[in-house]
Image 1: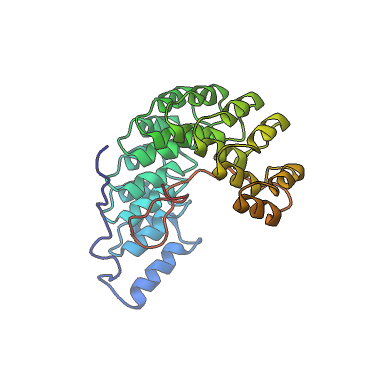
Image 2: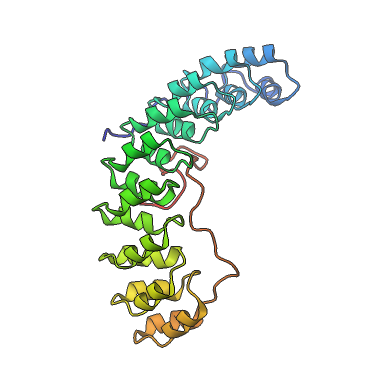
Length: 298
């Protein structure tokens, strides 16, 4: 994998406009005003202030002529705003998904205008995170999903396993030799009862623990897992939202005191909390730190 780049950072105007005071504030207010004519927005797209240009780039009603040059803006936050703009054309998104800056590329993945042609480019990218964001796409074309099944990165395959709605993809990833990928399948609520039973027999503790934390299991699987040789698995069961009361009561008598205490003191919330969260879309906290987009650290 090529080294991630953070190039095209804030330009020389960022944070200190060449024009100051009321003039810059007035132009920013104009760029944000819904009543501003499109011809004026086109003029503001070449404003010396990156803040003003970013405001134009974020407008869903910005004219295409204004957004096009902003895809090449030397301030990455301006380009990122264009990448997030749902009115950005497919052609401009295709340019931005190949941007040298990772945050710009990742923003394209969350744009509702992102279509198959853009997803195809994402599937071929050297950027592992971009492929991972693609793997979390709900409606992923079978051809692209098949390509990701064999992705060189276990993380990408894991994210596909966790989020896919395609039964054939789930079946294929059940046989993946990497445990973290099968762990992803274990967290997927769209597995069948038969597949869950197979995962309950998985030789890797992390897979079984993820399973009991994430989905409902048959009584036969629960009776098997309540006596699992791994304390980690039984502890996961003791605190899981998906374990019925009678199994939790049995775990309250577990020979391991930590498991027993967890089962006795567990207070599951009403209803089961969703396990699968919305796909990460390359959103970052304010600032320009090197952190990953949303989700848990890996």
